Length: 167
Image (cartoon, rainbow, N blue to C red; front, top):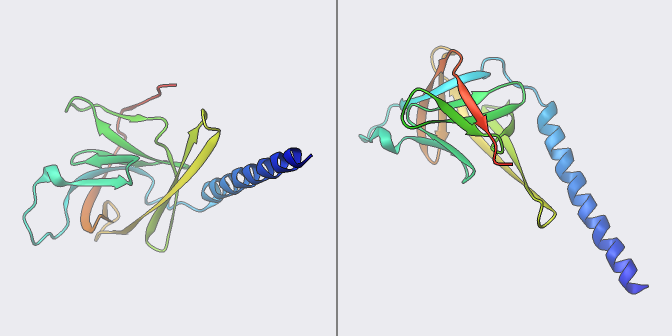
């Protein structure tokens, strides 16, 4: 009987955690997203950097999950933020379908969440990120601070990309 009670307690705790995760994801899905942010943004350079830096050092990341470098794109759609990376240094881009971030913007922050599933451990983990941002003099320039560096991105028309999956 004690084992049954312990098992039920553990199952309830796991389901509570799953409910909390689902609630957080739903919160992100239902928050407002600026129409001005939606679209493709090309990482183009450092913003008013006093120290000369190489463009190869230019990058924006959401933790260790996804990143872009110089001449690559952030893509904001109605629900997801994607990081589009160059394929073989050409003009084609790709992203892993697992690296979709639910996003919204609020108080000059782009907030995103990543839901990771470990099916072999029956575990889900949420990682939340935020990037301080503002628009430049016009709404076709986006300034983002990441890892203590301010960079600028330029709004671009549609970019062809492939979303791949290893499932």
